[in-house]
Image 1 (cartoon, rainbow, N blue to C red):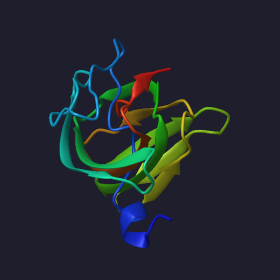
Image 2 (tube, helix red, strand yellow):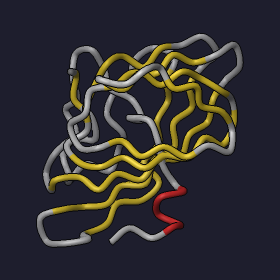
Image 3 (cartoon, rainbow, N blue to C red):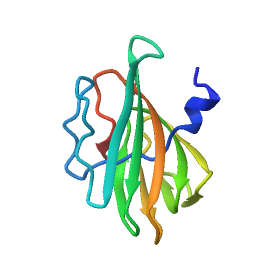
Length: 138
């Protein structure tokens, strides 16, 4: 079960590349991100069950950058620390998000992010299928 703290520490596909990711659970570095996006893996841990791992990441998104359409092989919980953007979740109307907002994105739900005219900082927690990358192109 996710705690309130865990849910508050997350969002946005902290960044899928149009060409995909090469990251695995064993890698400590963040996979390549699209232009205008920098991601840092802050912590990786086992669980909540043996089939999953938890990854805490920070994403910095340049002004007017777009995070391309992607999925996560697990739940993403995100918290917008700075900035504002429009989150486009498949099957839902565009969702404006801003500093102080939290977002939870279901496993494997395609989405993208269109950043506003200021840089954005997002902290995301992912509960991922063990051995899977954080994000995959959709």
